[in-house]
Image 1 (cartoon, helix red, strand yellow):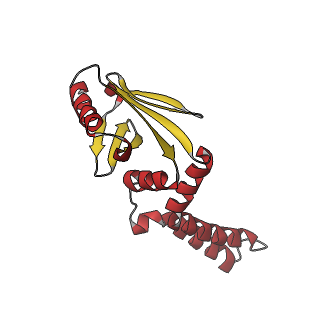
Image 2 (cartoon, helix red, strand yellow):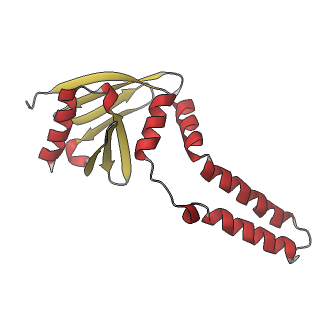
Image 3 (cartoon, one colour):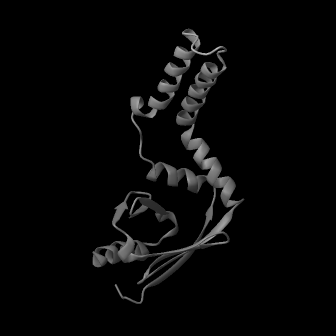
Length: 162
């Protein structure tokens, strides 16, 4: 491919995009580890209530309630994340995505970001898109808005930068 390659596209940040993004980039957590904090809160709350460690049991009931809220936050994590992203992006926000020899760029009404090829530590490719690993951050781009040339260029440029 030529070093003068330049690809620009526009896509919409909608619920479908955020669901795909979450599904592709989230790291599943195993059962006991995900609920450890809620189990701890529940045990602490029950101990405070049952042993009458305080004059009133409000603190114990607070921790029992907190354990229930923690269980719900783990259970509804995907829905909550998708709703937050959709709400923060605004209705049908547009993003301009640019791929060139320097790196990739995102431009929207709220955010502008450029990622150089040398900043990308790892390029993970799935059937639906690319995950750019930048330190501890993970940036997702869907293949639905890319053509075959852009996909091949991204893979080639990442390989050349390493």
